[in-house]
Image (cartoon, rainbow, N blue to C red; front, side, top):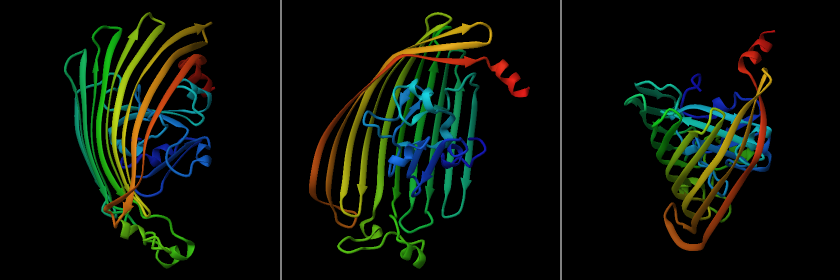
Length: 348
C-alpha cells in the first residue's frame, strides 16, 4: 500500500495473485478473489470485508468498499481459499482491514499528505495517533478527495472521518473502538457502444429510444454511511483467546438513474464472538483451532421514483426488506509453520 498513490485501493489489490479489482467509474469498484467476479456483473460479491473485527459487509452481503479512504488504513490482509472459512462460509474469500490507530506498538505521530493529479484530482489526508499512556491510544483521520474524471458526468468527491482507539486495561485484556463517517458522491457516465466510443470516448451514455442520457438524468450515486463497533479481546490463558464485538451501521443511499430515482435507508447491526486456541505440534509447527458465531440483521426501506432530470418524481414502487444472517464457525483447524523455519526453508 505504501508503494501506491493512496487515492484508490485498486493498484494495491491487483498486486496480489488471485485478486482482481476494477473501477468502472471513479469511486465504483468491482472486487473478486479467485474468480468470484465471473458471477457478479458489478460491485463486491462473495467476499466478506472487515475493519478489524467489525464487518463492513452487511447481512445482505452488500459492501460499500468505496466509502473507505485508502490512506486511513494501516494494512490489509487477504484470506483466499479455505483460510477464508476462518470468518464463516464465504465462496470468494475475506479481506481484513486494519485502521490507523490499531497497529501494533503504536507511537505518537502526526501527519498531513496532499496530492494532486490530472482531471482535477485532489486528495487531502490529515492523520494523528496519540499515545495517552501505556494503556490507551487514540487514532484520528480526516480525508477529502475530489476528481472531475476523464468522461462527461464522472465527477466525484468524498469526505471521510475515522477514529480508532485502543484501551489495554489489563495485561491480557483490551477494548478497541472503531467509528467512521463517510459522505461521498460520484456521477455515473454509463456504457457506450463501439460506434459511440469511436465517435467520442469522453461522452456519457447518450439518449436511446425513449430513455434520456446519463447527463440529462444526472445519473449519480450519493452515499452517507455511519459505522461503529466495539471489540473486546481477552487472553483467557497463554493459548486460549476470546474475541467479542458488537457493531452497527446506517446508510442513506440515493441513486438517480436513467429510468428511475432510487432511495435506500439501511440499518445494520450484529455481534461476533469466537474462541481461538493455539497449540504446538512437536517443534516445527504451531496449530490453531477456532469456533464461534457471527449474527447480523439488516433492515432496508427501498423506494423508487421517476427521475425527472435528476429530481425525484412520482413514486414507482416501495419495499421494506429484512435480512438475518447467522454464521456458525464450527471448530476450524489450520496448521501454521513457524516463521523462522519457514524463512530458513525459503533461503535454502
